[in-house]
Length: 281
Image (cartoon, rainbow, N blue to C red):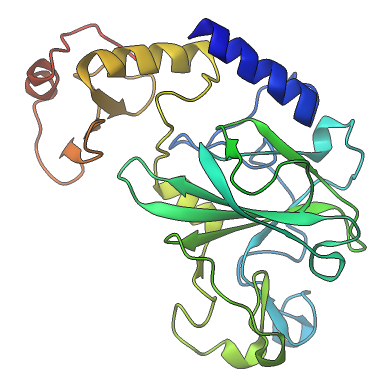
């Protein structure tokens, strides 16, 4: 296992450059923030941000269906430009277009899963990256850097529910990052072309990071070791099994118990999986 981890680390250094030297922030639910921090500027690119005629500052005649995370640099040597995978996943499309993403830039569509087994696609736009379709990515690991963009360098981040990338239609004003105002009064999914509020999604769902993926931190190594011994995972991170609020069967991906919807005896759940008091994550 240690040998494979070292090989993965060497490969990541060769392909994507040095590993970040500062702590990458997570949501309270355990996803990594795509640019490594939660306190980012969105400028005019807020979720459903409107144009000047509708109280916003987005492109005229359009509204935004993602969130822009400003980095203000295309210097790949600067950690400020780094972009990270929110969780483990696989690249299902690499789309490169000067018109859509900026000169020499691309977008990665990465298929991720929540801990409940729900599939979603993360769209990471305006990237410079050597990664390609079918590459696997790991939670909190570097996947690219923000490239040049005339209105300020940033990551465009979007979330699509399901495992299907929606189509686009320029003449009808249907895109992956913006929509024409004539769609504003339509219902979901037509209003946003199957995209949902990405910040709300990350803050209200838990990631499903494959137990065989490259461990990110010492805490996560212990998390996976304990979970693997009983085939049970529990949340939140840092809690003991008996004090958790939600338990998930790793083999089936199903929720065993959830305190938010029912009264649960944590000791009973844990002991059924052979995990006894003081086994903490």
